[in-house]
Length: 129
Image (cartoon, rainbow, N blue to C red; front, side):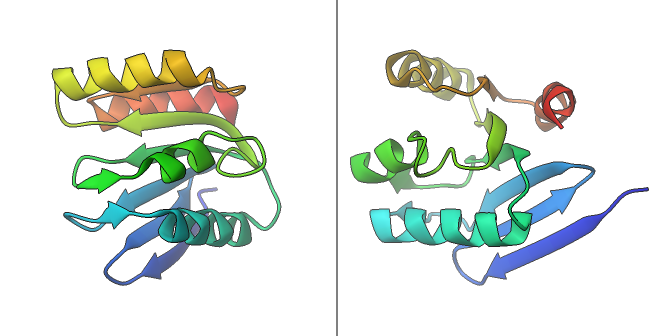
């Protein structure tokens, strides 16, 4: 049985849980500051009802995020709380190279991969439900 839960912050982001995977999508041209990053994680954890999920984050329309936000999202006590694995969806091969470079530097403690195809990301995350 497929369950579906959703939380929307109009003008910022949409979080939804479908088939045991949490999806995060951003409004076009959003600039993520540390305050927005903290709000996203707080809302995500509330939506998850304290359960751990794999997370698929689509950043194809995102304008940017600052260093404090990147650091927060990749920290165990921040963005990685209650996350079993993470997939990042980007819009180009160049973005994929840059994102993979960042992942190698950040060395996340959870499985993480970068994709250009949302279906591939979802299929990979099914292993972490």
